[in-house]
Image (cartoon, rainbow, N blue to C red; front, side, top):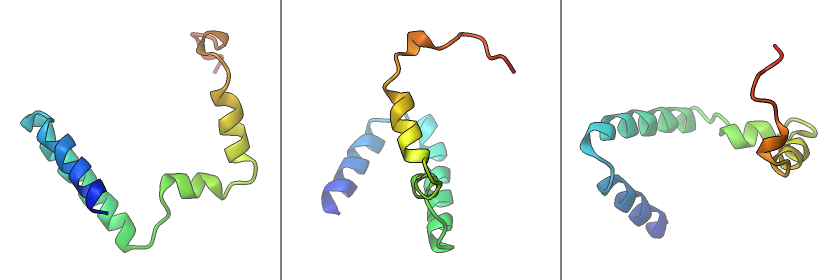
Length: 72
């Protein structure tokens, strides 16, 4: 845990001050979600049958294979 805290501190130290308020607000929102016992985004997606396999499968496709425009 200490290693993670040190890494977070190093990252935050190197982020320009104008962005630190955004980081604080994001950290507060994560803490509120954790306090309520909510699932993380990853945990939520992992509970949807077939979602992990779908994400892994799509991540292996080259970006150039996708269209620049959406059909919808």
